Image (tube, helix red, strand yellow):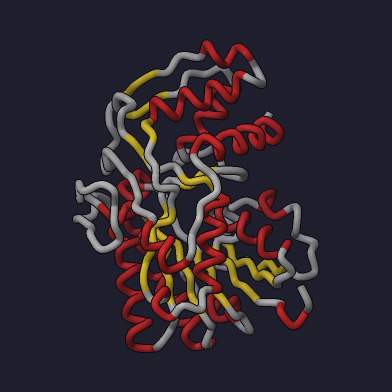
Amino acid sequence: MGNENKKVILITGGAGFIGSNLCEYFLAKGNKVVCLDNFATGHRHNLKDFISNPDFTLIEGDIRNASDCVAAVKGVDYVLHQAALGSVPRSLNDPVTTNDVNVSGFLNMLVAARDEKVKRFVYAASSSTYGDSESLPKVEEVIGKPLSPYAITKYVNELYAEIFSKTYGLQTIGLRYFNVFGRKQDPNGAYAAVIPKFVMQMMQHENPKINGDGNYSRDFTYIDNVIQMNELAMLTQNPEAINTVYNTAFGDRNTLNNLVNYLKEYLSEHDSKIADVEIEYGPNRAGDIPHSLASIDKAKKFLGYNPKFSMQQGLKEAVGWYWDNLK
């Protein structure tokens, strides 16, 4: 890629799981990448492979500070906004901070992007927006009532993005992520995602605990599918494709029991004792949706999305990465 094609991409939350994967990918494609992160949930070790790349700039700052947002968007072509406080349980425990980051911080970023006249603002939306809607698969135009403060914040993001598109002409695309997993996802902490947490526990021969009977199902989505969606959303030239939201998923669902069985199978290839690890079951978790499955027809139609990794293919890759990096 010649220098004339170098894009300047701001990735907020770029030290987090999804953000750092996006940084790595777009740097490898010859772009300039700016990362804005306050390291509340992101990690410096996620940046170690490219921190010294001359095309990479790290800005330590907080999206809750408007001046940090203004500094971060200077000279930027595109924004991939990943910064947020994730986790339904966290939002139930502390709705105020979740709202400050996910709503006020989001609005700060929209204003900064509008004022800098960036070409497009692509942001992480969430499957939690479907709330209590029971229809499956989830189609973008049919949502229910939110079931958690987190879900409310992510829905408000979509409403704000739509208003900024209509009133200020800022091009926006929201990506409703469905249970993303893969390399660099943090297995530690109170709000660790289920896959890295289970992997870590099994590697230590501890018994993973499933909330509920294990029959809740999710559309587990491997990180590389998410990277593909971000790139398509950022670069699409189809005017019909912008100023809307898309499910970002594989379009298949697996129960938590299925998930655990695959993890045991793939991990026991590295350590045969893991095949004997017992699974424990506990009560269902507040704010959890029983079943989640995305229709990806809209993304296929308007963006040409073609996800390459099923849950099983993604788990194989992820397990290999965790085995090499967490032991």
